[in-house]
Length: 187
Image 1 (cartoon, helix red, strand yellow):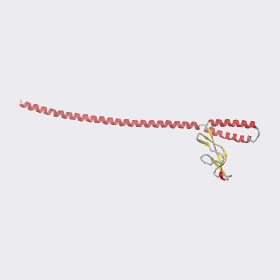
Image 2 (tube, rainbow, N blue to C red):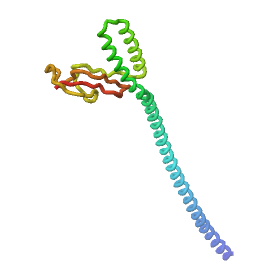
Image 3 (cartoon, rainbow, N blue to C red):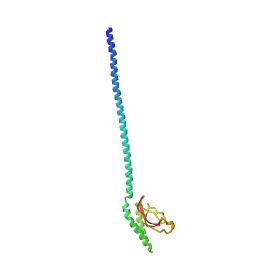
Image 4 (cartoon, one colour):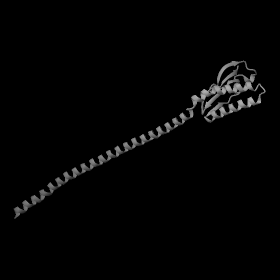
């Protein structure tokens, strides 16, 4: 029986060692699987963050596009009449010249008729966004807002470098000058 106990002791002693090695291998495999799962989760988190960033950038770019096109559309509506208004400016100038000549006569009915037509034309153009650039003799000359067609000797020292006469009125559509006033400046 002593031999049997000795053999049984060897079997018992060997069994846990084999089980421990199997457990260690299983534990190592489990740890490796868990590490792979964690690295996959981290990769998925990074991919998700990258896609979220792409989405936010695309969304912001689209919002900027919408804002820009809306602004361009508004600008287009503001200046859509520019060609028509430019074509009407000589007619407006002709009315001013005709009225100046008619006022030299004493025909009040004719003067009132021409003034009525002129005001109706002006009001129509103003309703479409046309504004007159306000310049008068004595104002300082600014090349950004007026076109100097000639220089003459200043009639007085205070008009030196300033506007002496406005030859042709200037007009703007919104904030944009569509025809610069033509002026004479004192030298």
